Amino acid sequence: MMKAYLLAAMIGAGFLASSLTASAADGSAILQSQCASCHALTQPENTSLDRLWERKGPDLYYAGVKFNKPWLVKWLQDPARIRPAGEFYRKHIKKGDKTDVVDESTLTVHPKLAQADAEAAADALLALKGPEGLIETGKYDAGKKPSPMAKMLFTKLRGCYACHSTGDGKGGLSGSSLETAGDRLQPDFIYSYIKDPQKIDKGIWMPKLKISEQDLQNLTGYIAQLKGKEGK
Amino acid sequence: MNISRSVSLLAGMSLIFLGSLATPVSAADDQFKHAEKLYDTYCAQCHGADRDGNGLNSTFISVQPRDHSDPKGMGDIPNDEIIEVIKKGGLAANKSVLMPAWGEIFSDEEVDQLAAYLRHICKCGSN
Image 1 (cartoon, each protein chain N blue to C red):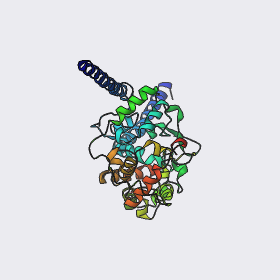
Image 2 (image 1 turned 180 degrees about the horizontal axis):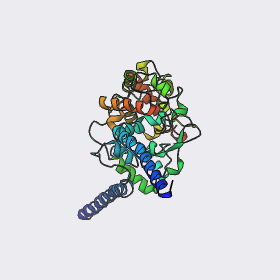
Image 3 (image 1 turned 180 degrees about the vertical axis):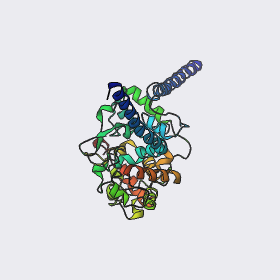
Image 4 (image 1 turned 30 degrees about the horizontal axis):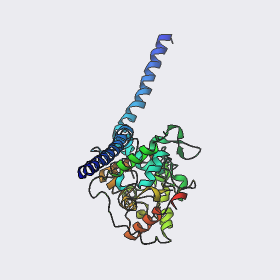
């Protein structure tokens, strides 16, 4: 009798292990087959400007310290454009009546995944942590409410709004839209990216500002609370 | 004037015209190739693909980005100030806070190249 229990337990454990392995393998396989042609899944050695111009999507080798899983799972099933002018903006603009405008005809649509694939891909993405020390963890104080000045910092004083939209059709177009940044991004990533975008995304067209710790905290707090209707 | 003489005259003039077009442009291309790439990567988002201050983001910026194709406006700015503003941002020269400091991204040599490139596109001398 004991032997039968043991056998059942071993079979059960074996099944569980194999199903977990299969799920993890599926996620990695999905990344390799569907994502790798446009996104770097390992840290690229080449960080030249030419590579920046040629890459078709943002690097994902540090996706695990960047994204929130619920957002990833949802977005992969129904991807809405995050960068209004695509990646990279300079290749997707044309002359408008007065200013440069986005040339929508050159933008491509991100592929959609089925729910199970989105779950598996999200798990595999969250396992990609990038090199040690890429972001600063624990510096952002989530318990502290951002100052009422935080929005002013974003829109005027530090000029983030010049390149980043917060939805409602306002705000710049060359950077990513931050309309649902709080759903999408981990607060430590927001903090670290504002502090030194070049450390995380070498060559990116976002400047490294000299910015006080207090402003960093406030900007991170402001951006982290930008959420879609369901995230609020 | 007979026909063959007209044709050879025309061909000669065409060659001279083509030569006058090709030589300076290709030389300029080589000299400013890297600065042009830097401009198109970092500056064009606000200052425009045509370098006229009407970039993709310009609608959302309270102060119109500088028109780099304007010989008068650019000609009035000394080289030192151009270099200072690229490196340290607009505030360093009492200009817009919305012009960020790029000194952490560009090397000193690249800033110099960009300043020379700005002189090239505004056609407004060296000082």
